[in-house]
Image 1 (cartoon, rainbow, N blue to C red):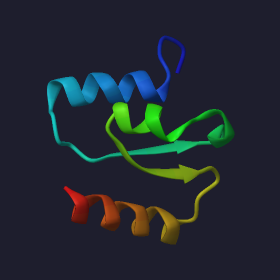
Image 2 (image 1 turned 135 degrees about the vertical axis):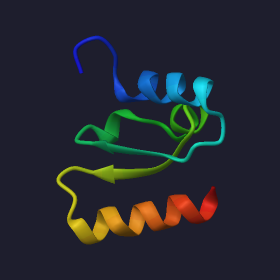
Image 3 (image 1 turned 45 degrees about the vertical axis):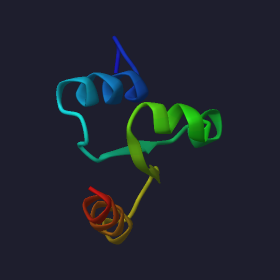
Image 4 (image 1 turned 180 degrees about the horizontal axis):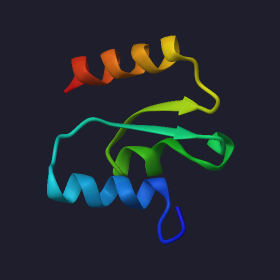
Length: 66
């Protein structure tokens, strides 16, 4: 995304709708630490490329946690 990254987008979404479960899909997982993800409201991370089964599993898990 040209103007902001996924973490900042997550923070903005949570500011508008606290408690929404956020999943992050990224190809740069090694650059992220758990504290940063948690503070942004991220409840799950998918490493790109993800299969449909992996995405479905992540969505189910996120919805259960919500």
